[in-house]
Amino acid sequence: MKKISIMLLLVAGVNFSCTEGFEELNTDPNRTEKISPGTLLNPILYSMATFNTLRADDFTFHIMQVTLPYPSNSGGVHRYDIGESAGNSTWNTYYRWLNNVRELKEAAIAAPDANYEAVALTLNAWIYSQLTDCFGDVPMDEALRGEERIFQPKFNTQQEVYTKILEDLEYANTLFDPKKPMIYGSDLLYSNSADDQKDGKNILRWKMFCNSLRLRLLLRVSKRPEMNSYARMAEIINNPAANPVFTSNSEAAILKVSGVGANVSPWGRAIDFTTFRAGAEFFIDNLNAFNDPRRAVFNTQAKSKDGKTNIGYKGIPSAYTGSDSQFAFQPSGLNVALATAPMVCVIMTYAEVEFIKAELAQKGVLPTANAEGYYQKGVKAAIEQWGAVMPADYFTNATTKAATEYNGTLERIMLQKYYALYFNDYQQWFEYRRTGLPVLPKTDAMLNNKMVPVRFEYPVVVETNNPVNYAAAVANMGGSDDINAKVWWEK
View 1: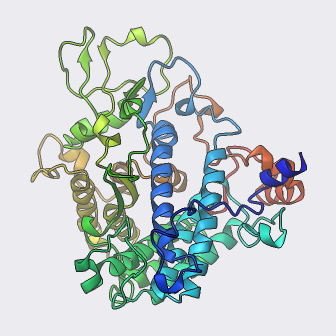
View 2 (view 1 turned 90 degrees about the horizontal axis):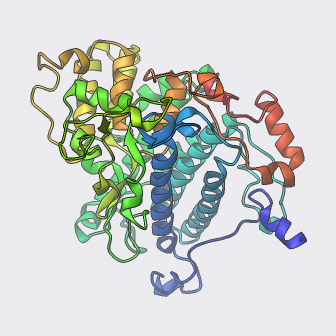
View 3 (view 1 turned 120 degrees about the horizontal axis):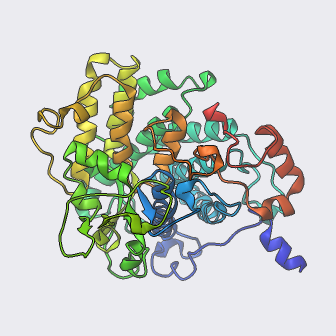
């Protein structure tokens, strides 16, 4: 029992690495006694991206009213019925792969290879940002140090976590060197072809991801004046030579799942993605108002009650009451192609960068006159990212322009950003918590006083096996470990 308890300790001594067996496949023959940075990179990328894609589907889709369980007469995430174990897989998975990122960084420094070190810093910031945005204060400085017999790590405040990962990203930006190829094997995210190696495309794209992530995280904490976010974001955007960010869909951090070898869909059976699911009325009605070409990419058409006739795109109300027999049609479902390899797992998109710029311009941080242009670029990129064709009159068509044209409001930007963040881990949820937008439907069948939960509770094992540091973290966050305790950047 003692051994079992130790294994369950918070992040305690977790030195699990899924790199066993990879060493012989991808190790520099001149360093056969060492772990190669390339051995570690692809398992981290694949496992984190596919896990986050699954979480986008089974949590974010529901809490953000993208899809609903069907039939579903009571309870469920879409009714804000969030259990104490809802975040367990996120906590465990993120820490497991953070351990691998730590090993990647150590191997890169030992090599030495500055590009791999910069990649490790970028991945570390990405995963820790997701972790802290899900839970609030989390162990960081003392996490993953079981070899040093630190089995009950102290928690860092969210401000400390953000300060550190933003510093790391700024440093990583200075390390990337496109003139030096990544020599330790292939790179699932940005390839490692002879073409990419020759002109340093893959390194430049990693650098763009690093700086685009800086923009995301600085915007996330922009309510906190001590972070000086707006000035720092303007500095990044106004100096693209030193701080390149995504400028096209081809540069975005989107992992391609080929279906070949081990690079397979996270769904063992793609049909599980569509079974007992229906499109939410809120999500589909807006796309109908836009006359948006993404409808056919995201959803199937609704059918008549007998299933014989297509009747267009039609969802069901969020948190409806009563039996599903009340609907005189079969609602739109999910497009199975989204979960069938070849497919994509979204990490960070070019469209998100343009919407960040649009928000900064709307707020006067960037020239206000540029807000509409950024907004339109963001919409176009979000549509084309999924292989759909952007209608030439998307913003000017007389029947849809009231819903699509830029009207100078943050509400308009955030509604389109909501669609741009489709299938992007927890980002819709995080951005809703930051802005309260888009305005989601409320019904009397929703629980939690009809409020969108703002965090996961810590796993029970944390409270059990690290009680002192758990209690300190909860006290620092307001004294309550519950789903409505706002994290630092929300206050």
